[in-house]
Length: 269
Length: 294
Image 1: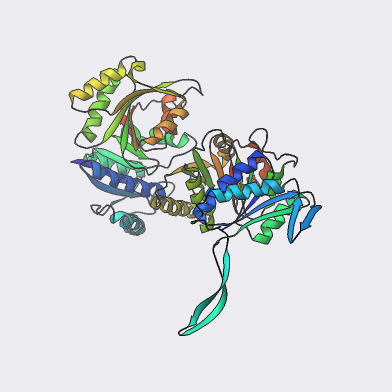
Image 2: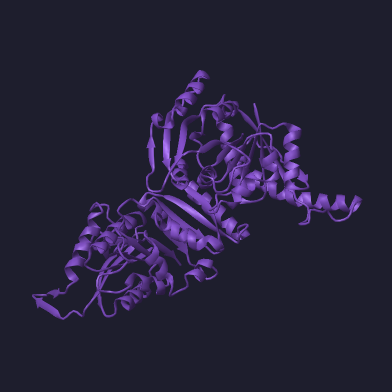
């Protein structure tokens, strides 16, 4: 059983992420764990030490606990397996990272609403948490039905690792997926073709998948700008891709991830 | 719901009548088709029958037929009334003969006014207490009416109710993008969006305006409620965050392919960006149709 950690704040993004994670449990054998970190003051310091600090932390936790409990209670009818969240105090990124390392989670899910500008996602990908996170991450940008996954492949060598990680998560599930190769080009020429266009990459990857008894419903090459391709991929309930931490903000690949309005699953290369 | 459709005799008006008929089919709205032209002078009366000759009269009659053609006769809420004297039980055991009209459950009015078209359209919308003024316009150029410079823009600038300006699209509207940055969202306007989504069979994108970092808590709460409302109605709704600083570039980019729907509340940044009198910029600049929610 896959152990998944869902990060929750008392906001819309977390509410969407929680609902989406509950959908995932219906198609993948996974157990959801939730966590919330009550942040220290803006300077990152708690007031005082000893009893003063403990009292302050406990008051903060109580407030946070109430808000998160409301969020979870709202979803409990559709997701009865949800347990009480783990409440932590401290720096958000450090605490999540420590929690993931301590409990060896297989997947991390958090909400981050789809944004017109790429900055938000870029900052997230380059955050300390994402640079050190040991497991794949689902960034839930919107609440969509998880009917079909798009597995985006770049080249054969990189994709072998991607596929092994993909199968680790979805291997026991019953999801339909398409294998997609993206080719970036000038605007206004969006096209979607079969396998032949991808220099044999799609064929090779499809073969690896079929050896594992996994059959993509469709294999195709989509040509267009990152924005155009992102729009096509909105039809999927999840878009899975590998990613380097060193990705630049202006790269087509990053722009594509930023334009996709559906949840994205990131496997770190 | 009360819809005022401002029309003239050109193809963009025929197009909006068809759209409004579909909308009225879903909402059972009271609909007024209004044409504004020169004063009616050529009137002939014979044996109790009055006939006028006016450049708009034929067009208005055609629009009425086209509007009604959208409905099955028996089902139509606009089907003509039949009035008769009938006995009705007003109390137990007591019957009274009343003049009872059966038939049309909703009004379809065809009106012809003369004068300044913008003023007359706005006056009629006030008289009707309209919820929505709907108009078509040429897609090419900057959304004009034949022989009435900037009419859709002027009406949109000055109307107190919501305004829909439909540009005849060559391709199907792929998305309706609704910008939301304020706390007061009326149920009516949420319903209106719902109707537009149904009418154009399209996806919905709810755009939340941020101050650069996050949404105002009340706006976020509203977004959540609206999202749940549409999800419950099986409407696919996407959320997108836009920084206030990027709003202009977002609108110019999005208006190329989506119908733009803007909540123009008093406190809204959109109202500051497109204050009364400057909405014409948006309507002229947008390649797609525009819905202003007030």
